[in-house]
Image 1 (tube, rainbow, N blue to C red):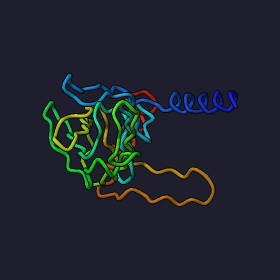
Image 2 (image 1 turned 90 degrees about the vertical axis):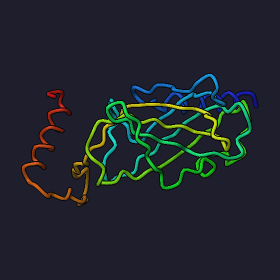
Image 3 (image 1 turned 30 degrees about the vertical axis):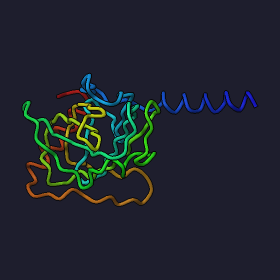
Length: 191
């Protein structure tokens, strides 16, 4: 029995350690925040800063420990452009919908939030700061994080077999080629 507990504990520890943190993330919680930030990850995130590909879903997972029972709340997101926070409306900002425990997160117990967001193709291709806050039903911060990201068009390649991925919509061939080569040069460290 004791070895099975050790195996389960090892598995949990391994899964926590394998979850990659977001490069450049800063905990912007304040002393009055009603939670403690533990970890966050974005899927996919293979670069620093995380590249959010337009036309694809991106998922963010945040682990935190609330100091109070979470009975309700919302997710507040800002894009930070040239130091100016710009509100970013989410399709659904009800925190309860994205907490693994639902709206019954207990104090001093690890809680997880999973949010999946479609990155629209109409978003500009820019470097941006993202401020992600979880607030309770009274509007008090539970936690706050900031991290850099890069919004960019997805360049599709065939990975295996007979896959025929959708090609990017080409409005201007020169612009497309410029973006493609800039991305290729950055990928190989020639930026």
